[in-house]
Structures are given as structure tokens and as C-alpha cells.
Length: 341
Image (cartoon, rainbow, N blue to C red; front, side, top):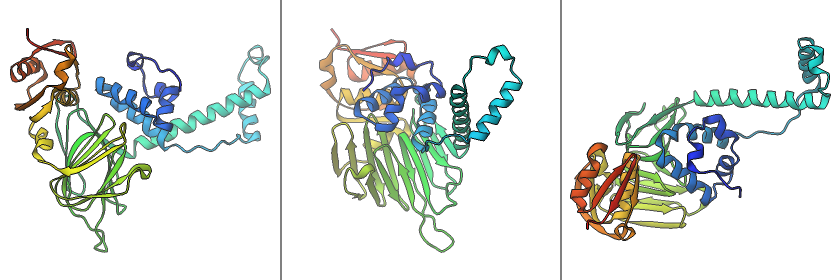
């Protein structure tokens, strides 16, 4: 596995840079835990890079090229045209094999750029920034509430081909309307995440997909969970149940839960019940797009019970300090947590 640069080394990258990066290509092609964790952390630390990373990821993951040698006569005509319009002294040392390679590369580049532009026009992307929550009404009148620092993608022909499909990165709550086709058949509604798919007809549920962790919480109705690459057998959820899959640990948990604990973010409210401070820090990072650092590592295991209205990020340090009875200082986009003396 190739050594990758630091996170900071990618901050100036555009989509073309990511497409050409070997470590990025390795992530898309093989999805090793180490590479997947690196790219997930990069997006969590720098939410502004999510959109361009996702565009490059979508392109590479959907391309299926066959190696094909350009037509000999067509390639020769291209270079004959170049020869005519280029001074003799500039082409004297260019051999024919090099010309063929350059022509092939140019043709491939045009194909890639054309395909990329075409693919971008086939989907609708909805993105949220730090502490932003967005309500989205889909063409079938289903509703999605998109949590902060998240992305939702769906096709422009969302409900015209007897299939309603969406892709979630981050967290969202779905209220799905039953929908039938012209023959009266129920039209499936499918939510895709990195590790699993959620299949429903009419129901309300929450999907969390960050940090190599996917969690589905069902409020009402019934859903079927299908796992990518047949990692697990399909599971069904009943109202009030949660299914949580951890890709890093390869662990699966299904159990009854208090759904309010997992959906209170819709009202911009955090509810913690005997929650380790490490998990609280992750929720803050997810919602605000900032970085939380423990100066005293023993704080990470502290458990708290509290209900907190999500403030704006400018007053977050003050509120956390009072609510958690710890010292919180802010350094740019980083919150530093430490015990009070």
C-alpha cells in the first residue's frame, strides 16, 4: 500500500487532482479500512472538500473502461493534421509510436471528461454545511431532513423508472410516502449508504453513515436492510429498533432503542443518556464540522446525561463548559477539552 500525504496536502486539490491521485484511486477500487478511514477523516475535518471528493469518487466508481487501441487510420489522420499545422523544426524528433500514445491519451481524456460532465448532470445533490439542517421534499412527496455536514444524492428521474433510489453520506431522517406505478404495484424506496441498503415502501426512519459506521433507526413502518457484498444476511427492522453495522470492527448490533435519542437533532437538540464524552465529541464534530481534542485523555471515558439545545458555533465552547463542567477552549476550528483545576 502506498504511503499517502498528510491531510493538509489534499486541501488544494480539485476533482482532477483527486482522479489522478494513486491513494485516492486505491480507496475507490479496494476500500481498504486504512484508506477508507483516512478519506473519511479528511472529509470530517474539512467538510468543504466533501462535494469535490464525492464527484471524483462517483466518477471512478462508476467507470468501467475496456482497453482499446484507437483506430490506426483515424489516429494517422489526426497526426497528419497536426503535422501540417506545426512548424517542421518542432516535430522533427517526434517518432510515430510517441504520436500514437499521445493521441490515445488525448482521446481517453476527452472520453473521461465527457462522461464526467454527463454523469454530473444526471443527479441532484443536496449538501448541508456545519450546523445547517435542511428539509427536502422529493418528487414523490416523501420528505428528507438532512443533518449538518451531510450529502444526499438522487437521480433527476427519481420516480419515473419504477424505482426510487437515494444515496446518503452523513445523516438524514426519511419520511417515505407509499407510491404505486400505473399498474398499482408498490414502488420501492431504497436508501444507499457505503455498507448497506435500506429498502422500504412507506415508513419513517433515520440513517447515520459516518466514520465507517452505519446506523438505521426505525420510527414506524418496516424496513429491510441488505448488506453490500453479502457481508451479512438481510435483516428486517420493526418500529423502535436500531441496526448498527461497524465496518472497521465487522460488528453488527440490532436492538430496541429510544428513537428520540437518535432523532432529536431534527429539532437542533442533543440528548445524552449516560453517553461517553468521546461519543459526545464525535456528535459535535459531525454537526459543526469542527475538530474536538481531549487534552486530558481520561475525559473521553466520562459519561454524561444532559439535554442541550444546539447553539451557534460561536458560543459552543461556553455552553459545553457549563453543561459538562469542564474547561473548553477554542483554537480556530478546534475545541480543546480539559479538566478544570
